[in-house]
Length: 240
Image (cartoon, rainbow, N blue to C red; front, side, top):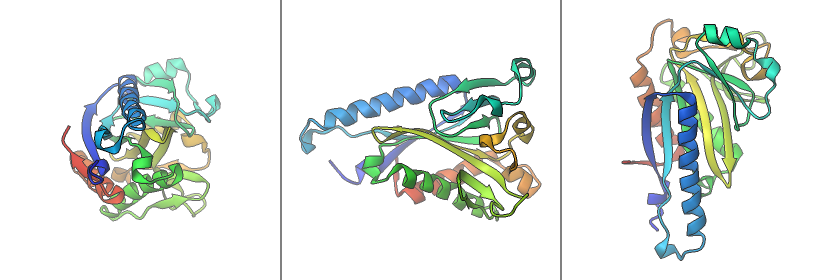
């Protein structure tokens, strides 16, 4: 197979879509990629089928998700309060604790075979963080990692000032990924008051719009993240 073709990724912007519907779609894409991967192992290289790696962008209606290692105690609202906020809640199969998704947030779901990219899971998460750090740099916002926590942070080393701007939680099986990142652009940060974000009780959350003091062009933000994803992962976009 063409080695360059193996580094191509199909991009799909789903717009505003229900969380469970998107989760099911991710599962379908994951299963398709895994099926091709396993079949290819039994075939000579000349007969192997190209694996379709994908990157999904989506906005979700208000929803809270709790990862495998999360605690129910980090959801501070009951069912009635969630209903009043028009928010749903799901326990899901990614790593990490609890987080919020909602309008004005870029949620990215890469469905990738990490073996094709020569990446460990740790290196993959590191690259996702690099995508967001590079994107924030284009807004003049200095961001970085924080010891002991995934995601992208502002003032992560400053006590009392650390605030998360992008959460990352992934699942990988047979080196194929699901779930991904949630990058706050014009996000209503009030919804984070209903949780201990990612399990932390002593750290804040922020958004690009809050840091810049103005509403952000959302399509432009998506274009910036997409561009940096291409650069960091060294891929070409492929038409669906």
